Length: 147
Image (cartoon, rainbow, N blue to C red; front, side):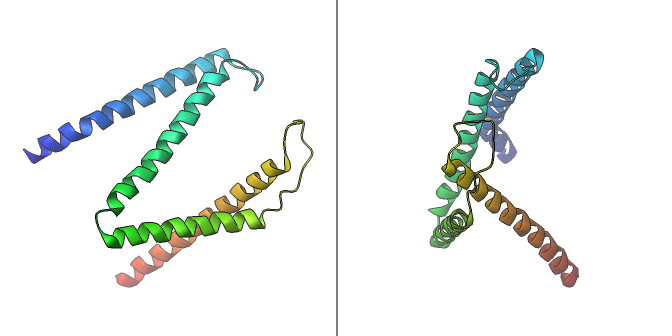
């Protein structure tokens, strides 16, 4: 009985997931079939808007579930606050360290802020990759020592 209720509760999420996948697949097929030669091709616009919508949806869901879970106990709320502060410190530190040095490009509308933002994103990515590698090594060592 409990499994049937869980399946019924998960069904709307599965349907939404299937719809999102099918729309993505159709848009990808349209772009692939037209084979645009430049980035200015009109067939890319709906595809790009769909990607933006999926990124916004992913961000909303990623932020929504921890927020809902955080209000269930004070310990989870404190962890969420610490996590938010850590993200602000990491992104802010990367922004301060990013040089934003301009490079020669063909695009004329690239500003100094764009270069600084790109450098900041690269620094945050480097830090996250290094953190993932350290975590993998640490968990392997910890699991080996537990046995």
